[in-house]
Image 1: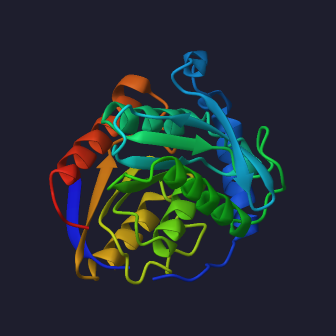
Image 2: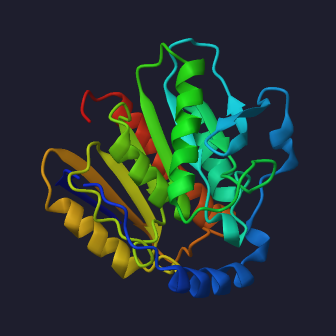
Length: 265
């Protein structure tokens, strides 16, 4: 099911509904403990582990370069650090490889306090600064790139959309299961770039009705195109590989490939 619309977007730090986040995410993570991590094959020599400087110390990442010096770049952001979110989350891992296989140089990393990244969880504000530092690192390594994308899952989608507002060089975004019921997305006024929002109709964490309200608000804006796709029966983590995860990744790849042939924001 696909919904497409015209849109433009704002920027404001939303209220952090920490109690709601704790209750809803806590229940969800308890139900889906197996969700989580990427296969060990990720640790190949083609994707070096990197450590780069963040606002509160070193940040740990996985950097996957292309041979082409002018390859497009993408950064992928993981879910909530306090509820098991890491750069090796399955959704994040699959988004990473989707971008790489489309010719992007890709970076995913652990927010502060996760894995070997230094610092402590900072209610989203510090994590946004981490994402900005990661994008700085990626751009420094790829000064000739002409396209820059940001992708995020759950909490990472919220951070990614804020990064989009602060960095005009970002030309496209992928927002998977944005938690519009937990965080304020009103900063998207206007949204500076076209993008794709994907969610499952059976998502019990980021409620589908709240995602639709967010999309409807974006549809009221003009100047860019927001594409919205819902996957029937999929939960927050797109648990089933064949019927949920793979089709979701195929949606992302089809959208990005189409956008790369266009000259629009």
